[in-house]
Length: 554
Image 1 (spheres, rainbow, N blue to C red):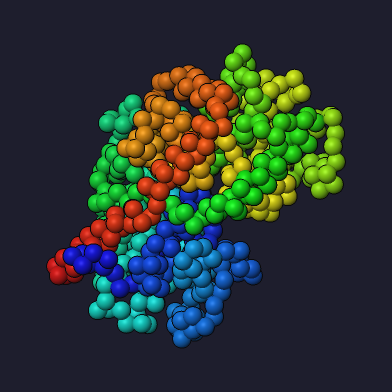
Image 2: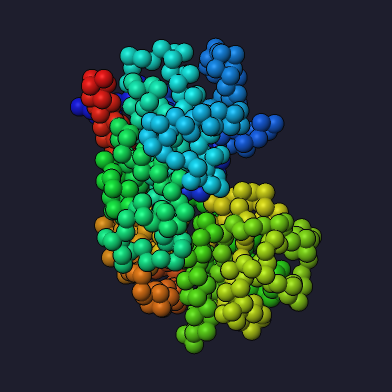
């Protein structure tokens, strides 16, 4: 680390998504781990939730000999039910999984202490509030136990808490173990996401919003309160993009101390020979699945297009994606076949037995399956927004249509029952990805796309999109990334622009496509963690200095 800056002797980092793949934060932590491990050399300890005490997560390898003296102490003295091991991602960082269920017995006392110390009214919390806060408390107790057992009192120790779900842990540590420097990162403010998700105009009226007032209006007081309190209380407050920094300043009344831009690691992308094989396998699986669903033969060189991410219909621009694909379908300029995939987990029931049978037995049919738009049955088929909009647009997926659309409403974890491939092994088969987000604090999906050499379309309302504009004009997909200007009022223009970009790709030569792929790889190299880790080094220094100043005042 930089000799002019204070660096941690030990770094704790906790998140709901440690060894628990839910969304983009898993990607942040798992890809950053390799670079941090090179710097910290096993002085980095992740803490995650033990969600199934009878089974280990697939990406966790338990090691009962690791810190075995403390493991016994933590159980017998501190009554902590933990598993210690390694996170099976590049860098193999140390991970502690903690069972937070016993902490529910302490909930009332803990909430009273938070009210007394910080004025946080947990009676306004609901949904996943209690579960998150109990995991935050459990994580803090793990840190405290480890810290005291190994006598780190005279060492530089930093504890990094991610998202509002872990905010109470940061407050507990600052209150009970003040010699640990605290950091809190918000990847998206809870109230900002709620404003956008409730179809309110977030950007047009940003300067006029009051976070506390909106939290009351949208019944978000509990989550907003702990997030805001942590932002103002910790030794270093960070967020992941410039666009979210503006949001924090307005809605949390606190400008971040550092913007810790998100990066990626190239070691998640296959080497050249393997890359070609995996790409061919992915394309084959995608096209064959679409053929089984529709009963149609699809050209091997069809343009494969996708979007992915959380099922936030407006925030992620899923509505825009479907609309744009529909305009491609009805365009007189379309010459090439297009298959569009919506890789967004919904309320999935199970893989379709009829589709599964056709795939497993390599059977062909010239008749479409019932509901030829979806690979897995949903519990709420009639109310599903994606299926309803696909139907409203008039998609048929019949042989006469050059454009087919397929909804894959499950987590691609390699065990979905249809593709049985993890997300990256599907992504690698695409020709272009589209993420027309309305609310996207960073946007890992487009960064992952260019890292895999696949051109992508995003917007200037995504943190990644704004970052990419430092290196590309954003107007031409041939640069690797097209960044569309999106506002609260130009939905139709966004749809039209995406349509034109897709049509342009259907007429692009193989040489131009190869150049586009090279541009993707070159841009992705600028977003590797080795380029961005310096922001964390700055943040650790700020946290430790502020902690020292805080301690000196006690």
